[in-house]
Structure formats: C-alpha cells, structure tokens
Image 1 (cartoon, helix red, strand yellow):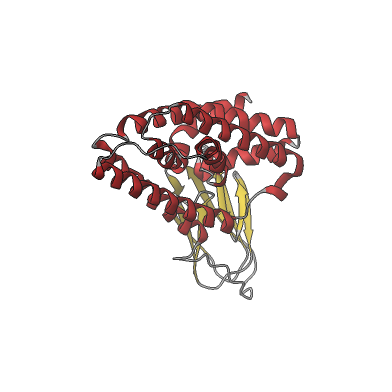
Image 2: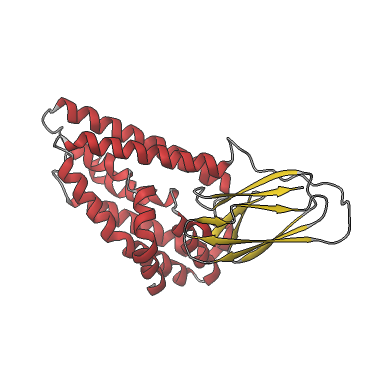
Length: 291
C-alpha cells in the first residue's frame, strides 16, 4: 500500500487526472457545482473499483488483464464521451440558464463514473496493475491499488473543486474547450495504441545469415531513446529495453502484447521495413528499421 501511495502521489497525479479527469466534467456539469459531495462519491467509486480490480489481479494474475486492443477501444470511447460532456458544458455556459433539477439517478452517477475510471488506465495505472499481478495475493493486490487511488485523490479533489467553481460562470466555455482537447487527446492515444492509423509490422522472413542482432532502447519519462533504431533484416533480433524512469514507458506494447520493463524482447527474422511499438498507454512511439 505504501508503494502504491507513493506512486500515486509522485507519478500518477498528472497522468491520471489528464486521462481520467474529464469524466468529472460530466459529473459537475450536470449539477452546476451545487453538490461538492458528489466529488467525494466519485472518489469513493474509484477506490472501490480499483481495490476490487487489484484483488482480482492478485488472485487470477494476467487472466484479468485487458489486451492492448481492448484498452485502445476503451480509450477512444472514453475520449469521445469526455468531448460530449464538454460540449454540453459549453452550451450551458452560453445559455446562462438556471441550474437544472437534480436527476433521480444522480446519487448513483457519481460513484459509477468514479468506478468507470478503471476502464481508462493511465500509464502509471498499468504499472500498478502489473505490480498487483506480480504480488500473487489478492490482499497485496488490493492494497497496491487502494494506495494508488489514495495517492491520486488530492489531485482529483482539486480538479473537482476547480470545475465546480467554473461550471456556472463564463469560464465554463474555457473549461469546455480544455476538456474537448483532453478528450481528443485521450481518443488519439487510443488510436495510437490500437495502431489503426499506422499498424505495427511483424512479418517473419527466412533467415539470410547466421547470428542474431541486438539493439538497445532506453525508456525515459519523455519517451524511448533512441526513438528509431536500425537492425539487420533476415536474422533474429533481440531488443533490449532498459528502464531509466518509471512512467508510461515502463510498459511497452510490441507484437500485440504488453511487456513490463526492463526486458529483452526476441523478434523472429524480419523483412526490410519498419516495425512500430508503443508504450502501454499509447502516448509514446518507437520504431525499429530493418535493413
């Protein structure tokens, strides 16, 4: 739990609020900031879903882990949902009408939105999930994820406070524009993770010569360095991923599977061309050129 708490405070604050905080726009926009307790229910729902997920991961291991393509679909859907919430917020800001009456299901809306953040993992969340899997214990897995949520809670509470303050003022337009940008960014990294614009290439080729090549890639907070490496075509290649900083790049998706770093990925002989890989969240991309 202490490890999860530290990761949430140090590394998860910015990335998780960027990827998941847009869901708060839909929550506070419906109530025009009149019920700050809703943010508390949002955080409570988030705590429950993460703790249960951590327990399942610790109990069942990687069987519960979502594959990269499934995560990519969820990111795109989440991004478009945030855009829809933001457009509603902008329209209400222009109308300047009185706050709408609370909905009958609003008491359930806040915890459900908080629980849904587990479906939109940031890069640090993926690292915590893998730590829960490695623990091999439902208690330890739940503790890791609960600590992580506790570490990121202050940032979410601050974000909710800011949104409540601006949701009934002219700043609602600005908040809506920022939320639209965040939603499009989330959808974009989902598309990048899924490889739908530039799909990853993994084409076996007959070996043309003896021996295997080795290339080294360093995972930093700013991406993979070098971002483009060259390897020999027609022979097996070992890609040695070395970890410099923990963050989104600590998990790499290559060949349709997630790999926790540091690690060595062994590729079969490739034809001349480029192969693409991304971090577990789809934010940072690297290329291996085979020649």
